[in-house]
Each structure stands twice: as structure tokens, then as C-alpha cells.
Image 1: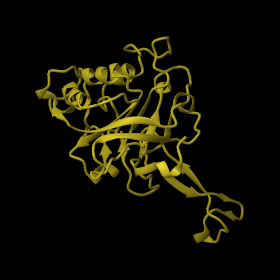
Image 2: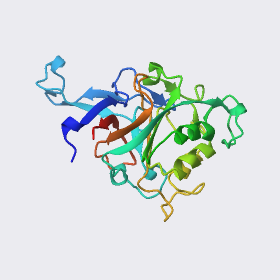
Image 3: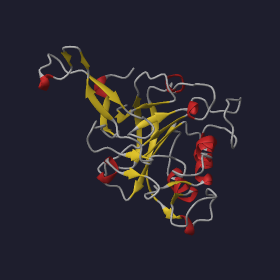
Image 4: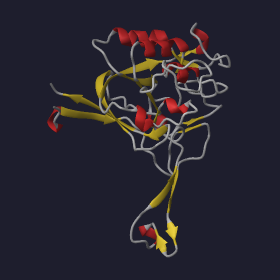
Length: 262
């Protein structure tokens, strides 16, 4: 049995969601905002004379910050993340990865890729896995260079982030990874004409498939737009992946890295 004395918190690797403030964004969607509730004479802002603060929050989990998504992201069936994320605590390898230009890799990329795209390759991941001693359920990707610009980076057609090659994603799946966490806004090319081939591959789906079948990896999750500070070294950790009980394919999330003493 774990006790608080045996759990050492290493760090929170989510990006704080500052409503109305600096925040990361994918696809140029509206920023996450909050506003005080107003109902007759009731004002939900102490600064404006109200007795308490209570606000309405508007956000798009997939685009406005750290979030965890499930296979319901791609299916006609409305499958919520609360049904898919069943691991309260799981072991995960944190690895820092140097991306390479698309022009310098022979691995499989989307048809609409640019030679200037930055790619996470199978070769880079294989080197990390080769150093691993023991089994893990999670993989945490920290892309290099790593800096605090990721806390408020605007990802769009003019600023395409790195993404995984097909061979890299195949290695992740065949290595038994159930929970993939990355500081990127998408594991696919941000604009890939809607194919989302890496998402489908990770969840055990065929190209274009939008229904669950026996091959689907229903309990696998993807967490995007994390930020791992440089002072946290590459190693194996336990991850406590916290989400609110949203009945939706994705929810804001808070991954906590920790170690557990024997």
C-alpha cells in the first residue's frame, strides 16, 4: 500500500490555463476566457460588488492547453475520456527528443508534408527504448529545444509544430505504450487534410475508420500540450494523470510526475 511518505512529487507537467491571459493555441481558435455570471442583481465578481466570485468558463480542450483525449476523438460513437482513462497511476519513460527535418529522414510522412517540417523519428525513439530496463505503460516526449515559449505558443499554418513519423508511432504501439504524453499540440501534422493517421494508428484503427472494432485500443490515451521543465531529468517516473469528469472525448488534464520509494 502506498502512503504519502512514500510518494515524492517531482513536478506538474501541465500548462496552467490562464483565462484571458497568455496561453497556447492550436489552429487559431478562440482563446479560453472566463466571465463573471450576472443574474439580475447578482454579480459573480467581488471586485464589482458581488459577495462571491463565480464565473462562466469557455474553452476548447483540444486547442487551448494541456488536455487528454481518447479514441472517441475519431469515432461516430460518443466515447468519453472518463471511460477510457482507467489507470490512476502508471509508469512512464520521460525522454528528450531531437527532431530532424523531413528532408533528412526516409520515414513515412503525410503526403502534404513540407521538407521543412520537424519530425520525431523511429530511430530517435528506438535509442531511448534501448536504454529502458523493465516495462512501462506511458511515454512522455519532451521535444528539443525546450523553453517556456511552449507555455503560450501559437500553432497554426505559419508555425507548424513537429510531429511523429508513421514508423515512430508504430514503434510506440508495438512497445505496448498505453498512454502517450507530448508537448506538441498534435501527434499528427497539424494540417494533414484530416487524415489523422498517427491518431488512428495509436488507437488501433485503419485509415479512415471511424467506428470501434475488436482491434481498437479503447483504453489508450493521448495527452497533448504538456510542458516538462528542463530541470526534470529524463528517467522513468510514475504519472498521476488527473482529469475532470467531462463526458466528452477530451478534457483538460494535469499530469503529475512522481517517484515512489520502495
